[in-house]
Image (tube, rainbow, N blue to C red; front, side, top):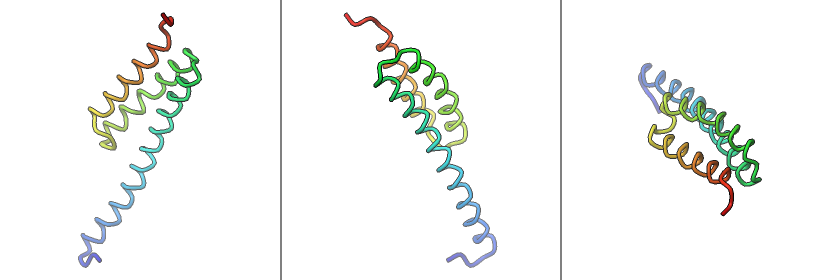
Length: 91
């Protein structure tokens, strides 16, 4: 248990940040899940729309330090590739 007042304040701060980060992370997951579901349904316009909505959320999470920037770039790149493949005519 924290003994000093500064350590007590630090634990309060950490608890607050953890709650905020948890909410941001779940928000990002929801946006990514919507893209995944749109891809699974095969709806190109819905998938593209969902991806456009997810991109700023992912970048925001990276700027806030919730998710690493490279992870965000990788996720967006892979999702965009899947949406593009969905849009391409099946050969």
